Amino acid sequence: MKKILAFWLLVLLAACDDGDLQIEVLDFDESTIQFCETASLGSTIFFKINDDEALILELQSGLLKSEASDGVISSTVPGSSKITYRIFSDKVSKDYFCNEIPLTEPAVLNEIIAEGGEVLITTILAEDGESYEHKIELSGISLVTENGSRITDLRINDYGTITTSIGN
Figure 1 (cartoon, rainbow, N blue to C red):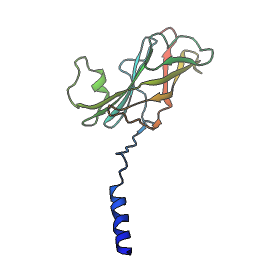
Figure 2: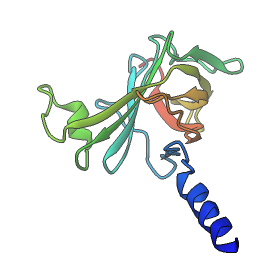
Figure 3: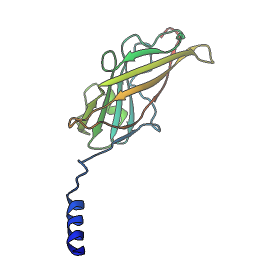
Figure 4: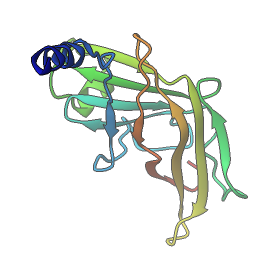
């Protein structure tokens, strides 16, 4: 009887399925914010690279201003601003995003566009008195893969700080 019970217990355990649960982690803490030209008030495309993955931010035009903000300025995702997460076939560099003619390598293996959240910007006058520092934070960003899996551990709240010259 013990052998039969042990057999059925093993069958039951072997039949359990975890539902292909896959928890993805996005960790761009060690990555610095990058852009193609010198940052200016007209800049709208920023990105962070982590080996073979990138987190791309397309800001709503006019969010960076040549004045200190009175509190936090908010832009909705995906309505006004856009966040895209890409996985590449190999390491990616700034050149991939900044070439006039787009590079064909590395290839994009997966692209996920954020379905919700906010971009928060706080602008202060820098200590030098000749530039502004725009601190960019992300809040409640929701990324859902094509198979419906939600990326659950999103460590990208502090996107980075961009400095622009006064009047630029």
